[in-house]
Image (cartoon, rainbow, N blue to C red; front, side, top):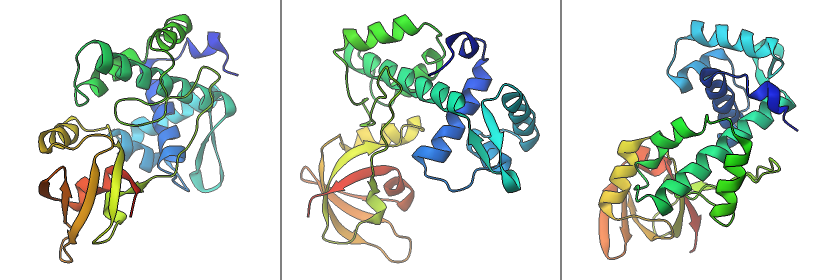
Length: 228
């Protein structure tokens, strides 16, 4: 269980690093995460990352294993899960109650997730009747800190003729989410793979009577469940 007094003393930047490390280790299923990989993920210099890791190790939130592999301690992991819970609850609140679109909620939730009040977040959860997923289809950790990792496949992994349903999207880019909305894709949209072009792996898809060609990069950030 997270020590609330200790976690309340963390800076925004320290919290960002813990969450990023968790996302790389658990959500992106990276076998090895070192300083350079973490720096690239956060778009900061390796020197800045090295200094921050030293601070987090001193506070016993991060440990460094053989060959520089980074791991979260139990308390570091609990704080990261708590941040993800707050982020996804705020996204859900903004989307369902304050008329924010799904491409607008991420940046605002990035700010709100650093509010320290445990009671506020638990009451927010209760107010919304304990939602299970955020607007992008990602599971919301519960108040006990339980975090479920759901196996997902990307649109780019499918073959010509496959049919799938959109279950989640990567929420890290506003421009990406805006494009998803512009072409008319939404959660639970049924998508058929019409063609996978060999030279650049772009994909021609059909959904709701619409035909679109999307890049491999786009397809890498769309998560689906295979139907046929």
